[in-house]
Image (cartoon, rainbow, N blue to C red; front, top):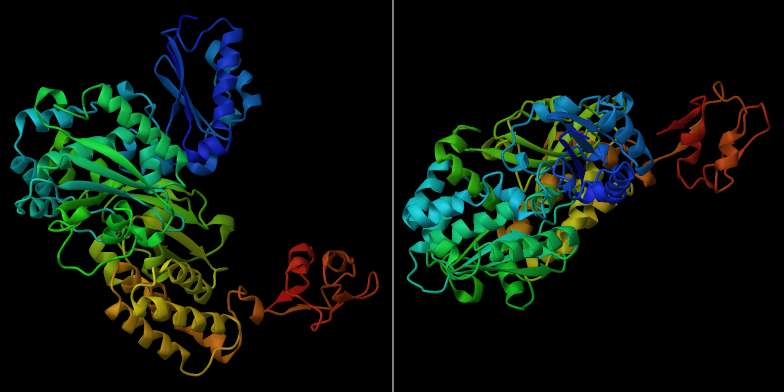
Length: 592
């Protein structure tokens, strides 16, 4: 075969779950049967790549023949033979399996910095990273720059922490250098605990060396010789790839003693977290590394003054650190050219919920929500109407459809009652109950409270009790005002960011959807038809054909009637499961 062929199979978590490993094996078999040894022949290669972003279409496969790339979607092992015979051997792509319906818009309307390498290189091959200019920034910093110059470059870029707070990264690094202490630490917070968030996991799975390189540069800047990656044990693929990357970086001379012959020593240790959400808070995370219970402590002193083992410590999240090599390599001005005046660069976002194209995206700061939802996300699933976008995870807020043109940057989101957070974004449609959404997130934060301070431990519990009561049809006069008052108290007096931000979902939903709270409390009605205790099902007689389909699926036997005559639901027996509503072809079941 006189062709240059490269086959790239998505082997992020989504790709593996969809059968990526089996697809790779099928390509190897199909090529071998034709006498093409993909593993050794220089003109043909089959290799894994990290998350491609368009997770809903996995397994995604790139087939590149003589430089011409074609991308296939939903690939299964039994489809591989046809791709090899028709596309690779005969030169005609299998048209019906190529990506379509928004794939180009999904990618072309993004601006990729961190994700430019994810989905392109083999995350377990250090040479693949080096071939894409990997570790050039490390060499540049260690051989041509001083720690002061390194910090100044990061400051000039405008990079702010991508973990949620948005604190200027260079300023944080600078503060650690002002402490006269020979032992300092740098920590990567990879304890990504927000429901629906998978940005940091995907970056580590797809390009672990970018994180390692960012930590090396940060360590040099602050004078640290030891770093930790605190990552949850629930991310086994990310952990495995990061471990291999650390071993390979040491073998190549980028980690350990006398890095690149410059005399600078730095090593990284992985610390596995047990899934405690509160350990995403910096001081709780450090206590956990020390072998103690992960509970926040009051500040000041700041962690850059007294952090891990009471030594000056810089903590940044995965996305923040992974940006650093690109900034050093391309220059601060290049990075600062993206985004807004106060929010520079790009942001990686996990786009989930009622959206046609869920997945991992990267956009310049300041892009309007409308562009994310409709241009990149493809609009609302099932043709339904957009209701809100929830940003910032359980500590964030709900942005109503009326504010769909809100720019996605730190300041703009704060103005409308939400936060950037780590980058989770959940799209909600007309079938979502906003009171129930607030209850969902409060249930999460209440269960994840460490219990150290009373406002968070007791306050979140009381807030959840009130929300639960409202969704069960037991709301009382004054409940809305009580939620607001208690929320302010919890936010003002909690020890750490978990409690201080936990009421955000309540405050934003009351601010924009007060009418839904009032309907639950005063009318005992859920406008979205979600809250089970406020639902009732009835049959509209003029529409009922007496087909008996509803009675056959009713698990409680609550539907009675003769065949070909209108049926009736016995309300005392109805368990409100909705089976009849979903089954009826004549739309004779009314939910309300």
